[in-house]
Structure formats: C-alpha cells, structure tokens
Length: 403
Image (cartoon, rainbow, N blue to C red; front, side, top):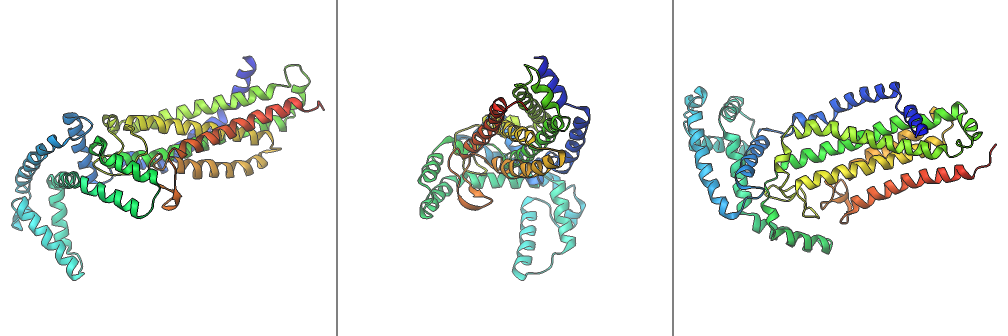
C-alpha cells in the first residue's frame, strides 16, 4: 500500500496538475462552453424546450393521442396572447398589423414576394418582422404549430421511412427496428431535439478532453523513472522487481479518478440547464434526431454515455502507460503521445460520442452502416487493448534478466 501511495504521488505532481487545470479551463472556454451558453440554439429551440417542459410536467414523458386535442386549445390561447402583445408594438400598429392573422398574411406576402422575384430583402420590413418576433410569443406559436403538424403526420412519415429503407436495400435489422418503432409509444416521446443535439456535442468534447488530460497526466511518470535510472535500483531489492505492476495500477487508478472528476465537473453546468426533467422520455420521439437501436430513456442514455467515456479513458490510460514504459526521453514520449491523443481522443472519442447506438454511417455520412452495439464493442476492444498491453509489459518485466 505504501508503494502504491508513493507511485500515486509521483503521478499527481503539482506542476502537471496546474498545467491540466489551465489547459482544461482554456479548452472548456473554447469548445464545450458554447453548448452550455447555447443549450437551446435559437429562440425557436428555446420555445420548443419550454413547451416540452410544460408538457412533460402535465402529461408525463409521452404525448398520447387523447392528450393531443388539448394542444389545439393551447394554440388558441397562444394566438389570443399574441393579439394582445402585438397591439403594444407601435411599429406594428403603424403598419396595420393588429392581430395574428394580419401579421401572418403580411409576413407571408413579403416572403413570397422575395422568393418569387429573387429580390433583395427590405431591411425596414425585416426590422419590423424581428421587432414583432421579439415582442410577442411568435416563436412559441411557431414551435407549437410545428409540433402539431409533426405529431399529426407521424404515422404516414414513419411508414414512408420504413418504405424508403426497404427500397434502398438497407440492412434488414434496421428496417425491422424502424417498423418496430413506428408502432411503439416511443414515437410520442417529448424529448426536445435541442437536448439531444447538445448532449451529443457536449459529450464529444468531454470525451476528447478526458483522453487529453489523461495523456498529459500519465505520460511523464515512467519516462522520468527511466531518465533517473530508477529501474536498476528497484531491481536490486526483493520488492523492486514487481514495482511495474504497482506503477501500472497507479496509472489506471489515477486515470479513473481523473475521468470521474472530469465527468463530474462537466455534468454540473450541463444538468443546470434542466435536461433531467426529460430523464424518463424515450430517445425517439416527436422531434427526430436519430433512430435508436435500444428502447432506452434519456436518463439511461446519459449513464451509457458516461460508461463509454470511462472505458475510453481507461483504454487511453493503458496505452499511455505502456508507451511511456518504452520511451527513453520526453521527446520520444511526446512523439508517441500526440498521435495517441489524435487517434484515441479526436478520432475515436468523437466517433464514439457522435449519436452512439443510433442508425448512422461509419463516418460523417459516408461508409457502411454501423451495426447495432458497435460502439460498445469498440470501447471494449480499446479497454482490453490498453489493459492487455499493461499486463504484457508487466509480464515481460518479470521475465527480464537482472542487468
């Protein structure tokens, strides 16, 4: 136990921790902070989020057909509120816009005129439109109207998707899953699209940072021992020969702790945006994002993503510790650490967290379709590779002749 504590102190050095904290702050400001500030990207997404929040509280995780009729009453109430709000806008009154119907007609005529004549936008009219948008519940009405239309056409839309997948000769498992979802209650899930998208992008940034921070933390340790000729001194004692086992264990334990800390730090501002109110909602739903392979709720999905990130982190830790053991100096380790971070963090990490466990091509719209559960297999292979190489290094160390 004392040896483990000593090895942990060698890893958790103040200098490297300060560097990780500084780099972590810069990284967060450059990348994931955007998805916190713009959790609902745009006023219409914000309106959709607010509506979904109200409906989840009122109806539960799904909007059933018998509850759909109440939304027509809500639409009438929203239009009445709009009629009251627009009268308080002097510019709208000057243009003769006194209610929702007149504004909708005015806006439609203006947009159709631009579209039909391929003309330039009238900045005065544009300013008036956005003045009304911002001074009324326009975005809320638009989000509600979009929801009603999507809900009412879901059955036909889902049937068309199944037919298209069959015509395109996509894998039979995908066609069966699509048909299964078309008749399930999950298609009425109230999970907003903005929550799904922010979860996807925020998770990708977190995965990349976990790998980067672990590579930075673990890379110097075994290289430092080699530069200081620590290994021959350890071999001279009875307890020194198996010390590499303890070092590898300390590296993996440190990586696990750092990954948990990273996830915790990232989760706090994310959950502050309110996504857990949709924890019981299914991944599929009224607002499409990607066809899920499994009937998971959003809460379960978050736990699965955390598991993927932990597996990715421990796999990266094992590879880093293994490469550090066979690096003669810091430059050699740097030349190994950079491609390791790019391959495991930027490439694999981003891929793993890019809508995992949903229908998707292998890479950014190209390549064959990813099989069901392939992300879990990839994470398990990486973890096994990292741990296996660490075990191999320890085994080879025990068999080496004392020099």
